[in-house]
Length: 151
Image 1 (tube, helix red, strand yellow):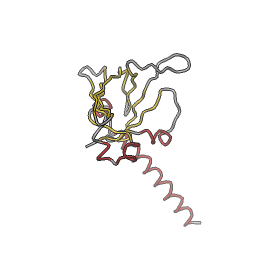
Image 2: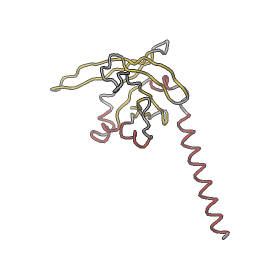
Image 3: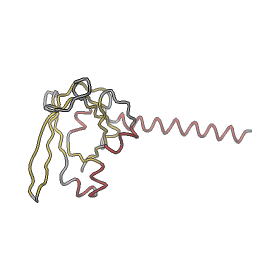
Image 4: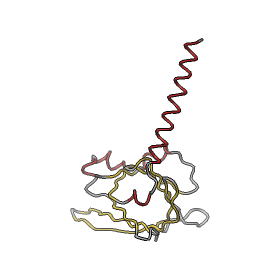
């Protein structure tokens, strides 16, 4: 009985510590727009090309000075030639480890005609997930679409 009770106590203690650690790790990002500054790649590109090769064509994010806009830049390759592309998001708000924004000039709409509102959720300073506002996907379901910082 004592052994089972001690083992139960150990499991509960470890669960609490692990939950606190993952929560604290995500909370390391208290300014998501500042954290987005830099070069990012999709985890799927790492799986296909390896991180070093994938980081040769990252998406670069730059928040505007007034923090109302998040600009992005990337290169596409076709027939060995690179073309520079860019766009921007209008930032609606940031809160905790996430920021909400909509993509300027995005033509996709929800079934009711509303714009997609994208939420960037930081798991750590070097990894974030995109989630559409109102979608109930879990971090585990969003993980295949995560973005990882290039160094």
